[in-house]
Length: 113
Length: 111
Image (tube, rainbow over all chains, first blue to last red):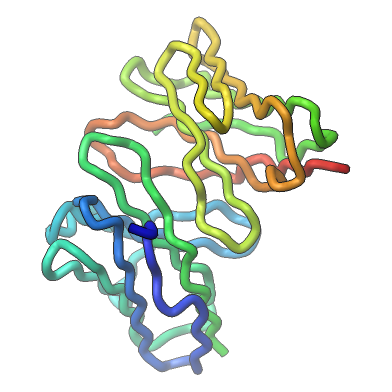
């Protein structure tokens, strides 16, 4: 297992377009998290899944954002009608339930022009 | 989760020990201290965590004061590759699952 994988690594999109990112967690990890990070700031929590259930969503996750983890394995994060303020690094992490150590992917850098 | 306070930046000479402080004066009895670091353009990397006893692993040592209101991450022999932003995070392993990152400490290792 090579760790948490995110795709794509970089995405440039025009304002108003929809984008979707994918995260493949470490295979035996049942918890999956999405974070967003803007330049010079620490990562900010967006949402978290345990298996296929989305258990917590941040207020940062506006109605233009949706995340899924349909079979409890990989997850997707979709942003509809992108805005320039959505430009950020989107990070995915996974962990085992009951173990606080989260493993992060390399992130997807989104640029909205 | 308890708030943590870290210096904005620190410098350390290559080969010396880097000591990164963190204050968490409002920590609760069931909250652990976690340290992550983020090297430029990469995702955060777990370093170490502890509850009240000092901890050591292959990457670092974690020293937690007896009153648990502060801690120090020690990188015993810093290398240039240790240049990164270091985050001190306090959280319980039960209940809230997310990590709450602050601004962290930007550690620069100088040759």
